[in-house]
Amino acid sequence: MKWSKRLLSLLLAVALLAASGCSYSLSEKGDKSSNPSEMKTLRIWGGVPPDAGPSRMADEFNKEYKDKGISVEYNYFVNNQAGNQRMETILLSGDNIDAYFTYTTSLLEKRSMSNMALDLTPFINRDHIDMSGYFGGSVNSYYVNGKPYSIPTKLDQYGITINKDKFDEAGIPIPKEWTYQEFREIAKKLSKGTGKDRTYGMFFCTQQDITYPITYILPRSLGGDALYKNGGKSTNFDSPVVYDMVSLVNDMMNVDHSAPTHIESVTQKLTQESMFLTGKCAMTIGPWIIRSVKDQKTYPHTFTTAFVPYPVENKNSKNYTQGGLGDFLSISPNTRYPSETWEFLKWYATKGMIYMVEGGRIPAYKEFDTQTVTNLLLKGGENLIDAETAKNVLILPKSNYAIPSINTNLSEINEILADEFEQIYTGQKSVKQGLADAKSRGDQILRTE
Image (cartoon, rainbow, N blue to C red; front, side):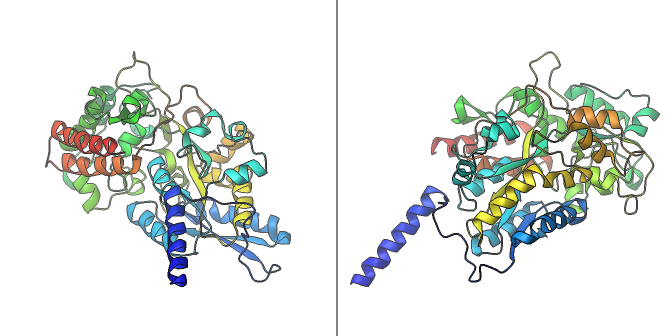
């Protein structure tokens, strides 16, 4: 009987810990190594290919920390739904991950509240880290339920990536600001040919993430909380701007045929590289492709890549700058070495990110020199990347960012949108019906919160 009571108490304690989220006390015995003198290898999981910066980054860390008995081993996972689910399965099943990257706020919220990430408050307080001073005042917007479960390491300042040569050939000036309708018309002008010879004005890359337009385009017109209204108590899917944006994507794919359809994107496994760098499309959704632009061996081409802000609903409205922070680096609750892993997080955010710039990632840490970052971003692609638009769109800090302040059930809301968008873009539902169903489903979730 005594043993049963002890077992019951233990199970209750575990349940309470799971319900409260994952926390860590610096007074706890964090190092699980039986031999304190052995090299402690940290397993870091990320969605950036090793040759796009992580390998160099890991080498530099290992050189610097060799005498301290710490090294890192970088493990690459494909940053799509299947790749993220695989990593989450490993996170929940054991101790094979010490730290990992999350690339969307919805997944950050999900992982933070599902015991997949440590609350970093004890580390931040111990080392007197000024998070706002390091990463800007918006850093608090990426806390989950008021707690920092990650360090944001990248400045997410994106835009449409364009083939400047195709714009020049068509006599189209490079836009500095444009509306949904202007974007649509330009995509039609840049689309040519039929069948297998068809080249498209735009490629949305929906087979990788069907919610990309909601994530990157919509916030420019509606701000960081574009998916919510009433303080997060209901969804915003009945907004005319949301309707216009989803209609824009649907019309470009299924009416104008100025972009590959979602069915084509999925069945043909189309990628940004296979479309943009081979000249099959003149524009694509995001500039993270910049690392592949420089890879002339794999993707030989001669055209110039430039960058344009995402379009807005109306130029005369109060519009926002698309941007914020990303590449959220978290510590796994199952890490063998929490303190050593925290040392890596600090090093990566304030020093290691410089080795990621050539691959197209801009550091969030405010102390990095802007010109050094610009030079590194262009390195190896000086004749392939338009320096002026790269600096203006991707690097120079802006104001009035579309920063999220609400993340209530964000992962579930995004799953609903993905499901409804799939039905809209494949012709199973109209835009009106799909968004109405998304609102009904989303509001139900928020009402039960």
